[in-house]
Image (cartoon, rainbow, N blue to C red):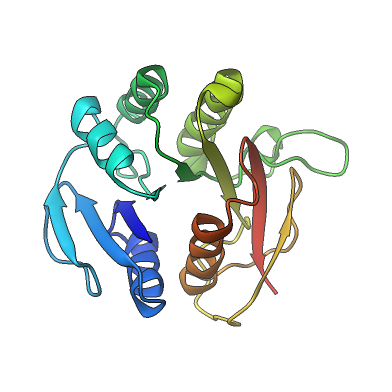
Length: 204
């Protein structure tokens, strides 16, 4: 398969590039810097806000895995929301596997984790942004080939088990390593098992 990883030089993205390459896929790593990601066949420089360039990358791949997070240094998260909104509106024909946050997952009472008083304030902007992005994908319905992946609340953890477990809208475990998430993401790219829905992942 031809797999593109947007955010391929980040913590999650680099693990995905390595896992996809290990399985023999042709991997394009896209990042703002364009620097090489270990295992990538091709490295390109692109900004998520460049909708036309992102659409071209998506449409040229069998599957595109997006591992891009909002600003985590205290800057605004709205540019990331706007970039995803523009991408959804552009309706690329290729498949999208989007890594979102855990904050939009639901607790046992059906409430979002981000709305809990115990949810860390520092993580709320990103969690709320990805909650908005998830709803935008859901609103697109089957006009777009999308999958949204929510990692376990304690992501990233250091310990990899080499296996993972999945659920739907509720957490299925506390911990998840980048390596185990990468296995789940490349599996999804290969199998297209959760098209048009969100699923949760935790290390097994």
